[in-house]
Length: 89
Image 1 (tube, rainbow, N blue to C red):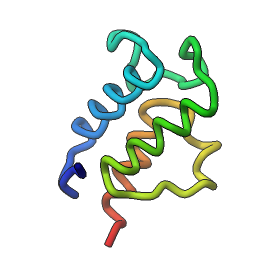
Image 2: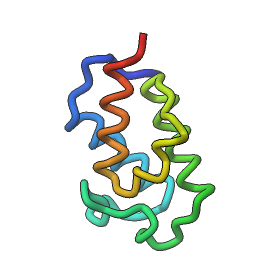
Image 3: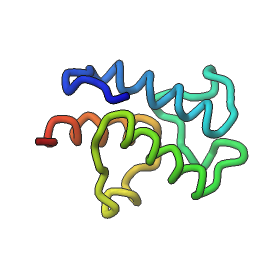
């Protein structure tokens, strides 16, 4: 199921937090806007790729691979998803 193109940043942030908790098996209170993915216990690149894939599917967007090194925090991923929603056809 995909979200409406009008999802707010807060809506996207909440979804990113929820998916991050599920993917990395961490409690919600440990995941916020400034959480660095690689600082999450048990974080590894394959799980991060799985998280991004789930979110791309959820929002029906594709994030550019050249943006990957820039995305280090929950907030940065949220911002990339918000921008991608605004540029999709």
